[in-house]
Image (cartoon, rainbow, N blue to C red; front, side, top):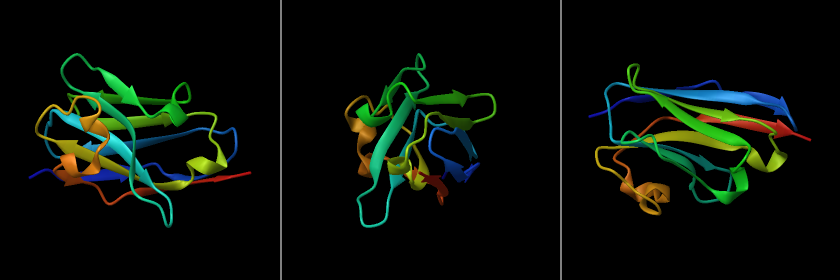
Length: 124
């Protein structure tokens, strides 16, 4: 089992920045960030793999968001810059014990473990 705990969400004006974190109880091969807005399905935002540190982003956040992980601390991060109102959602951290290469890393059902989520609200 893996416990995941997100932190760092909050409210920010459009154009602002936030950094959210996810502390894991142990190492996992793949980790990712997903988000879910009210009335919408949970969707992948970014994924990172421990092998080589390869990253993958959904097109809507490319150039604005950066995913990273500190394997020594078993912590995942998402730096979000130039935030837009459409980025408003509950952000979830997910982890899997296998390598989920694209596009598998963007599919929620491929992840074994989930955090409780942290709310990000961007006002215009």
